Image (cartoon, rainbow, N blue to C red; front, side):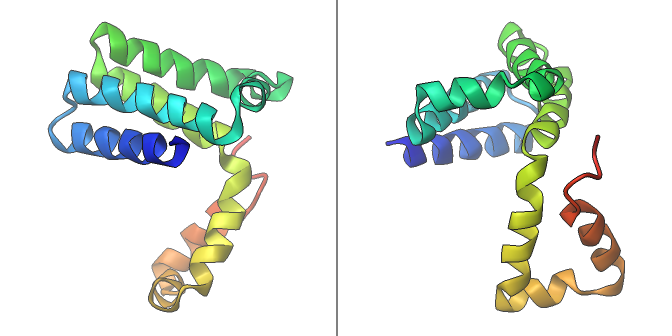
Length: 129
């Protein structure tokens, strides 16, 4: 159930951005994504993840962006959410980059000259403080 909710949340967020920041789709996507995350890792671990002392700024931006989208300002809310998302999940980026580099076609794309330097910066764990 959790993976389904998270997947539908990401789909609605993506589709809402494609359709010029449709408020309703973005709001549904936000609710489904956060609910799916809670179902996947549990309510207590979700709460602990979002409200760690060193992640309060990131949580404020992410949940503040969700709130701003829900009250009707989708573009500003999504900017806050994306910034908060990158701050929250920056520890996972090196793992994701390492995994993608092992995928046959995508790995060769990530090793192209212009893309490689950007991916190397994203792949560092302490670059976005």
